[in-house]
Amino acid sequence: MIRIIAFDADDTLWHNESLFVLSQEKFRNLLLAYQSPDWIDRKLFETEIRNLQHFGYGIKGFTLSMIETAVELSEGRISGREIGMLLDLCKEMLSAPVELLDGVASTIRALAKRHTLILITKGDLFDQESKLARSGLGDCFSHVDVVSEKTSATYQTVISRHGIQPNELLMVGNSMKSDVLPALAAGALAVHIPYHVTWAHEEATAPPESGYTKLEHISSLEQVVQSLEQSKAKSFQIRN
Ligand SMILES: [Mg+2]
Image (cartoon, rainbow, N blue to C red; front, top):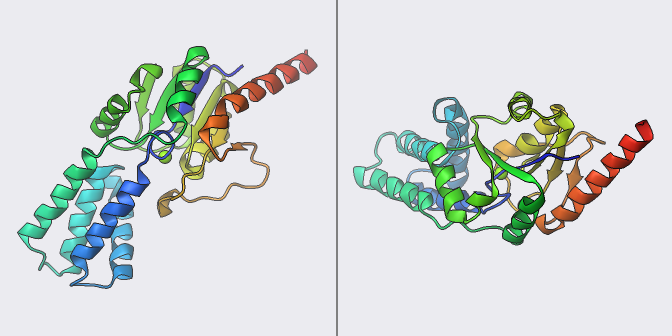
């Protein structure tokens, strides 16, 4: 039986990457006087990845990386006013309305009636808690884990903290790299629901027969949970 259904938050429950794409477009426009668009995108991505070890995931780290890239690409000529614009962009992102993906509210509310739901997300604690509160779904989740990375060890920790067997956890998320592959490696079940844009850092290809379920849309999730439970019950009967 599935005892806990864990959800990723960004781009699984609510739109997120699209916000970063829009902000990056504004950033690019600000720096066009100094460098070409491709060069700006490449430098920003390199800076973000290099800075993950210092700032972790999330909007604040992204903003510091934008500022660092701007200083570097303009060879120090970026003005205080322009840095101020990047900080304004950061605040705009932090206070942007939380837009749930289609079908999320009804699916989460329905699943919460019969299952324990938890949230496992990367990013900034303050920002993620604020988004969950603003999403109106806070009461559906019994626990929120904001983690610095999603590795198989992260999922093992969640599994042992909740005192369940690995295959009693179902992880649902949009990232093959963070939500699906490490959860499977920890022995959990996984459902992949791709979002229409993926940050390059989250891209990964699943090896063949990795044993996860891929869904186009979250509204089919209830049905998938039911059939996963039925097939588990069947294999339990066969074994016994
Ligand atoms: Mg995500």
